Image: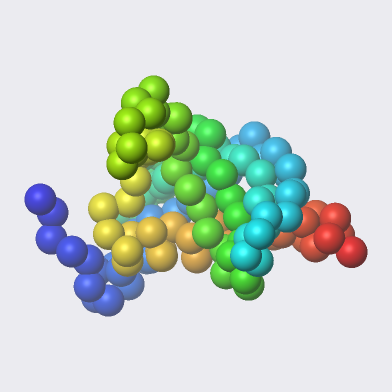
Length: 128
């Protein structure tokens, strides 16, 4: 198992990683508890090495985006489980960040993108 990221690791990750999105599909919908579903997007992760140009690392399709209160939150693509036994997992993620710090870096990077800001704005317009 990989080591949990600490603040120093998160700062390094922030500097060495970039994100971009494609196929943004805004589908704003209010849910109970102050949760607003914003829509779907495909995520590309880039690595910025100490020398040279940015390198594309991976593309992760079908992610969803929501706000919980005022906080942005993304969910990796998941598949509904076919096991309906009590206590069984209802969804299986296709991928997930390995730590809270890594998820926080990805979320903050996403929040800075104009496409994501547009999805948030559409949800606010839909709510009013």
